[in-house]
Structure formats: C-alpha cells, structure tokens
Image (cartoon, rainbow, N blue to C red; front, side):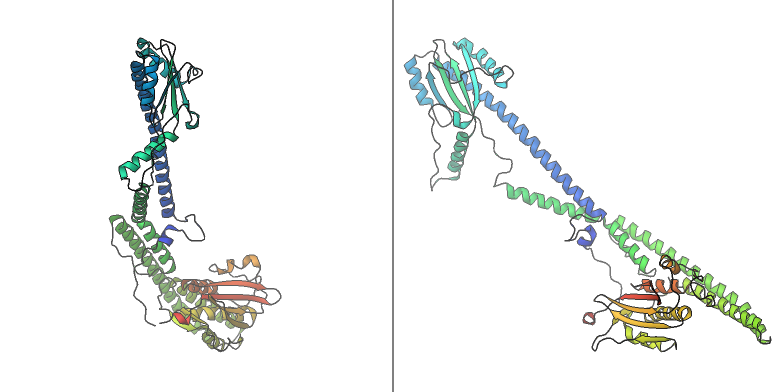
Length: 495
C-alpha cells in the first residue's frame, strides 16, 4: 500500500482547549487561560456595574435633596405673605402628578427625624434658609409610595396613536408615582403648616430592554476576540504538544512546517533541531552497534573454524553453544539499536492468515480455532515488524515452555494474538520487569535456554511503535500467556 504524504495538522478547538461534553472543566493550559480570562471579564463587568449603580444612586439622592431644598424655598416665599384662603387656592392649583401641596393646622410629618439621620442635616439647611421668610419649623420624612397623604393625579395612559415621546413621558410619570416620596412640613409664622409631597426621582436600570441586545452583542464579540487571542498566543504550545507526541511514536516523522508567527516559527525550529539531533544520535548508536557486531564476528568466525578442527567432545559442544549465544546477543543488540531508525510502511494484514503461516514454521506451535465465516481480523501494520514480533513470542513460548498454543481473537476495537506455553510461568511481580533489556528470570524458567534477555524488549517496542502493546499473564498451573494487541481496522474505512 502506498504511503500517504504527511499533512499538516489542523487546529482542533475541542482538543486544543481540552473541553469535552463529558467534562466541562478544561484539561489543558489554553483552556484554563480562556476560562480565567472570561471569569476576569465577568468579574470586572460586575464590579463596574455595582460601582456605577452606587454612584448613580448617590448622585441621584443629592439632586433630589437639592430640588427639595429649592421647592421648599419657593413655596415658602410664595405662601408666607398670603392669607389662609389664598394659600389653599394656590396650593390646589400647584398640585400635579409629581407634587401634592396642602395646608393644615397639623404637620404631615408627625415627629422630627433622629439627629444622626441625613434628613436632620437637610432640615437644618432648609430652616436656616427659610427662617428669614418667617418659617418657624421644618420637618422632612422619606416615605414609601403607598403611605403618602393628600390627593394626587394619576399619570395619563398613552393612547393607540401616541408618539414615542408621549409614551416615554407617560412611562416616566408612572415611575414617579411608584417611587418613594419626600414629605415636607413647614410651619409658617401664623402657625399654619404648609405640607407638600415630592417624589424621589426613579433610577433607570443600567441595562434597559432596548440596550440589552447591544450589550450581549458586544460581550459576544469580546469573547470571540478572547478565544482567537488565546488560540494565537498558545499556538506554539499546541505545536510542541503534537510534535513531541509524534516524535515519541516515530523519530522519523516529517519535520514541522516552519510557518506562521515568530513564536510559532521558533517553536517549530526548536523541535526540528531536537528531532535532527535525536536522529543523529540514533544513527550513531546504530553504527556503533553494527561496527561492534562486525568486529565481534571476525573472532567468533575464527573460533568456529578452530572448533571444527577439534574432535567431538562435551567441551566442544559447550563452546559451540557459547559461541551461538554470543552471536545471538550481538544480533539482538544490533536489532535493539535499529528500533528507532527503521521506517517500514504499514499495510492491511489478515492477522489470522499471518499467524497461521508462522505457526506452520514451528513443529511445537499450533493455531487453535478459526474466525467465524465471513469474519476477517484485519489490522494495519508493517508486515515485517508484526511478523517478527509474533515470531518472537512463539519462539519464547517454545524455548521456555516446550510448546506454543496460539489463539487469534478480536473485539470491536482491537485484534489479539495470544500465545500460551506450558512452562513454570513468571511471578506476577516480575511480569513487567522481564520487558527490561537484558533481564532473564532463570530462577523460574529453563536454565538451559540461553538467550540475551532482549527478545521481549524488542518485541514490545516494535509493537508499541505501530500503536499496539504486549502484556504477560501467568496462568495458574498452565504456564504463561503473552497477549499482543493491535487496533482493529474496519474494512468499511478502506477506500
């Protein structure tokens, strides 16, 4: 199968920000940066609204107190020189939807406010200003709209043909009727009390229904800008993450395209230099192993020639076995050194057919069972690499357990090759350690098997490079089971 040309990875927001439907909290640094930025914007907007609302309330209160002071002055200046009947007539004419004026022998405000109240200071200010007009006492009280005394006028309801300005004026008048009210009582020099009620100016909401869509639109634009900014700022982070992941799987993966902003280009250049350095190190390691193997083969060959001149004896047999072990170790070291440098293209492989062919190569190996009719156990892998890994497991089973029973099975996502032997098995605590280089558990396996201790190391590394894995499991009373697993390839995906 022809190898596909490498394509540059596209930006994936879900993967980049690490947020999925199953989990709302982000799992990546860019995701957390975006969340913190959004929370900071919300906190700043909320704080701004609270500050503006408080300042508007304080400013509105000062304006109302100023207007109350002016109304008290002009009413006192108008009413003080008049007689009682004239005051009553003029008071009736002055009343409207926002102010109620009446005169009586008793004050509308029954008792003065406490000395530490803000209105007490206002009373002193008004009294100092009106005393020259003959006002002998001033009382001010803030009441709810349902407690005001005296008649008032209802706000006019807008008609069907009312214009926009008329509707706004009607709405404001209705708000005035629903707001709190200041009740003021001024005692004139003849003992009569001049009482008037004036409403507190209602404060409009910060976000009116008409302005809410505009605010939401601006907020959405800010969030989109934040999303784009975090994507651009953290792009090198995603680039490094993806590049290092590919390098971990294949040291010979295509280099990163050095394009984009300066930070992105620098990150790409750094990763490419690191990859080139690693490739050079692997090549040097391979050359060293090959040179060592070449240098060792010469004396080993001479030793074999000299042994051929000797008579058959127990010593000759043992020396030949030792030389075979040395040659096997040399080959294993060379194979281990080449792990990171080989690049065989993947192909679609019928796993059962390959395993059946491998089982036929060994007299002590048998493949049990067949897949159901019409079922194909297909995976995508380099054929030489996969064949070598399966052979290694089969040879280990024969070497340490006298026979290899092979089973091929599959799940929805994976295909499995299980190789069982009848050896003594391996303790559970040692199952992972045997995958380390040069580790041989001779106290639990056959002492006469020889080997370099690199077989399982090479097999697992080969399989992991193609997206699979190898695990071991001790079977009580039955030996050891090695399981090779690979992602299953669906034939429906094949073009």
